[in-house]
Image 1 (cartoon, rainbow, N blue to C red):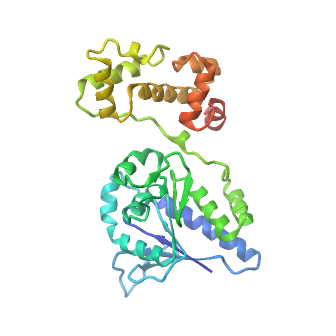
Image 2: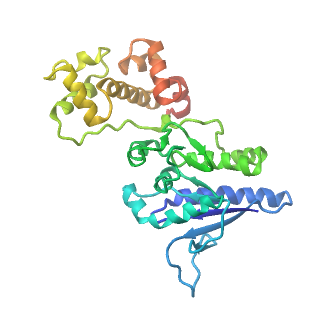
Image 3: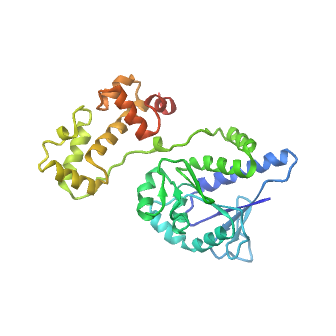
Length: 323
């Protein structure tokens, strides 16, 4: 039987723990219905000092202490439900030695969404690939510069260390692990039960362009405002910021320094975000969407959209249209 441990960290996101339990309990039911022994022995672990006179339970499972805990085959780190991820990691520092010990003893470690920050803090991901919630990637990259971040990936696996993107990507992570531990048949049965699209490989189309606005560089603010109010014009970036005082080179340097991207990248992201909104919220024809987003060349529009979002404009509308 596979020993599956789930951490109940401080500030864990309830949805991620519930999803893990639901999936693996369902797999165990598959086995029981097939007259077989359950595949997973599920245990929940916590680093707090637990009262001895009265057991602590979570959804019917006794919560066990990591001091000590038996070796696991697979350990899940849930996502954090905290806005301040750095503070959440500091509060969960007590798990780091245990995770390192489990990994060194042969356990595989998997994390959901922003749980990657705790795995990153162990140092085990250094030099390895990882992903996390698409909107937390910049913070993750700054915190763990030696990790090979693959921001667009839904799931990564490197040396027995697994990460996933935004919370629903955890289902793709679990399918990946189920295929490894239980075979493709169980993975497919689970995908059908939970209506999971097994072919999703990218999470870029879930991202939202949220540019930094809280800074004190007036020149950059002027450039941002000009781009955001005039992006529909099909002119060049030079034309859009020509009224801003200062040389093109100086504006570009300061813009990149403050926002992290060039003015041209900012313009493209602004236009693509506008196109995504039109595709989802209106029934405009594709040519109208293209023009109203600031593009005049259909081929260039499709190419940039696909590169930025991870799918074609038509595919995006088919997947997310709200009409």
